[in-house]
Image 1 (cartoon, one colour):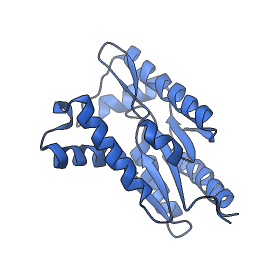
Image 2 (cartoon, one colour):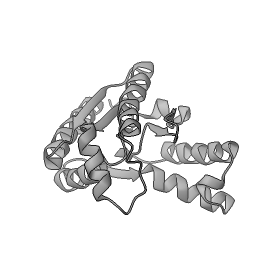
Image 3 (cartoon, helix red, strand yellow):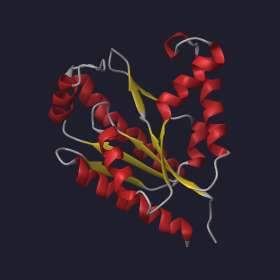
Image 4 (spheres, helix red, strand yellow):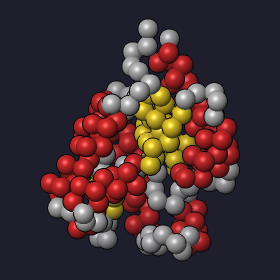
Length: 194
């Protein structure tokens, strides 16, 4: 008998690591094999905040942000059987380099596996320089802190919740990273199905 009706895999990684590209490859390669849905966590939370308070996320106070996160977690609890890939981050980094864990504690018991997409700092810097559409820091020191922060927080949450933790490298081959991620997800689904 299946111990849970859904499998939620939290995918993190520093901004610019290529999560979106890897998840796009994954969606194409795993479609039809398992019931996979990529959930763009940040976009949904921002949308909920706008709908609830009619203001942008940066204008919300901490209590309002917490209400939005709780709403999102409650919506996840209601979903039917599926594999949800939570496309998100584990940390934010302030301009002065402070690392902030941003995964809501209420989400911890729902997540069955943690994965950080990872690449070299030089690769992150190069990708950020090429992506002029998004405003991201180009400060090498802050990029390295964010990169390491993603690993530290993901490992800590996985350890606290006794859930698997994986690192998927995406230095130069997003298709290879997607294959590795797909192997991790299907293995977790197979475990949950037995």
